Length: 233
Image 1 (cartoon, rainbow, N blue to C red):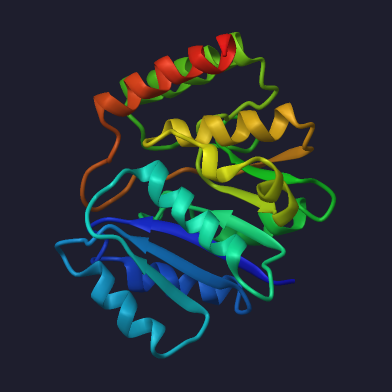
Image 2 (image 1 turned 135 degrees about the horizontal axis):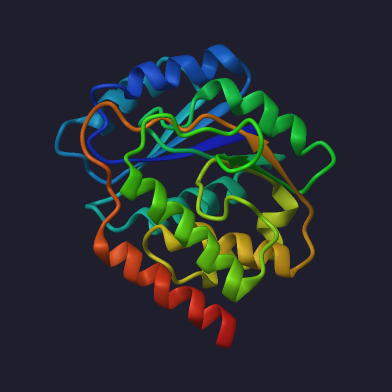
């Protein structure tokens, strides 16, 4: 298996080295691609140093903060361009809300499925430390997505996923327009519209312990309008 984990970063210097270490501890043969938006705290410089010690660690430097969705898009496109090709591509957050211990379950699920989704909303999935308003917003977002798009996935908005390479090859990544967290919904909708199979894997989602959540009102608005555009488009 030749797999890569794509991780967007912005000001993650306090824990990025620990995250990379734990990923390699749980999956010693996996590759890691960091997509850094010129973090002022020096996240990119830390990863540069780590990449000199291991050829499994790579980094893409972007000139400034250009959007979460675009960071993922650039990382996924880079992963698809490599030779020899990666068999599987994983996306995860940099703040330990997605724990590396679930990587093996995601990889195993894609042995017979096209996509594995780390899910907070199936049996065994948990979000132990979210406030009620954040929990309600997430639930409502998933209900909204199901109402308009009829995606048969319990957790459509989560970002801990594993894709078989051929899935990403055929969905037209370069034509994706979303810039924020709507990227997760848009990619999933394209995959399922093309008949890709999926499995949800239960995870415990932990709120970040350092810094602040990067979810903005503009991301919520983009997702609200984007779902309608997918439905009526």
